[in-house]
Image 1 (cartoon, rainbow, N blue to C red):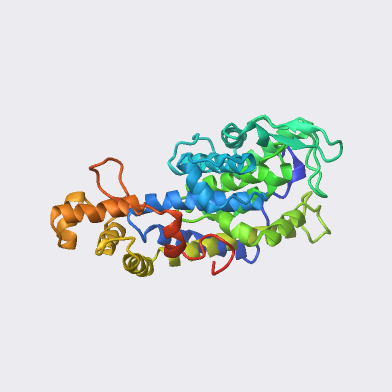
Image 2 (tube, rainbow, N blue to C red):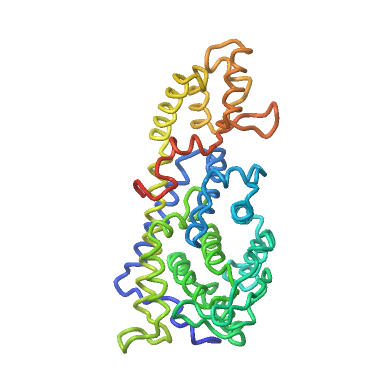
Length: 393
């Protein structure tokens, strides 16, 4: 039963199987990416990618929080300047929420359900400082308070788009949940991740935070499909093509153009083009991370980094051998380090201590096994072009 015809069509027709093929290729590539690294290294990389995802998601919102500030915030080191501190708190809220999704600590509800969408908004907003929980009505200048997890009760206008009125929202969200949690094949569910991203933004259920919620919902959907994981981020691709992203979102807001543009209220052709863009961005990011995380390529960059650090006196000799073992095996038993690098126990401990002090290795306990860590200083060398908008990917 169609409860809200306003959001139709919920999925575009794909008579040439363009989207089907893209969804299939994305699934295959994402599975190949996940198999490149050991589970322990995947976990470590996941922490880095969550921080990166937060950086790019903030950038889409016009909030430029530099990677080092995010790193400091995650270590509970906050700036004294209020605006900068607020952006750091916003970053921590995003990272903590995505970590819950990645670790399966999110609700069991379908990510397209009203309950899950409200949970995303509530979890994110409840961690924000009060200064970020206000939005200004552009027509009246009135400041409106954002209630975490609460569906908006005011009418809004976003550029040229007028989202559904408050009394239409429940019906639209019920249709949204019905459409995207229905009996779809896996390929169609992958396409639905793209389509639902636009449709949620079109509905605009909250006064503010809809873009962030839509991206986190897409992340959760991809994880449930075993395609998304903590090794890649669609937000990076969207931010790097932000003009095209926003332009295609606006185009998909348009009503049906003619008799050849589907049979729903909104343009089917524009939704198709947005889905093509979204899936292409996903594929680009998977392939980009596949190249960065290839063990051979990664080890070459780490070796060059260690060589330079040793020459500068910032790392001891043989540091690379320990890091190499952490990459290949996932973790290194402390007791194995002396035989690994051919030094006596005390000298080997000094190498380990230097790597820990520099933030390149970490451990759950003082005597526990060592695994890779990714401080911003090393990320800039180990993962070139991961952050600012130059370079490939």
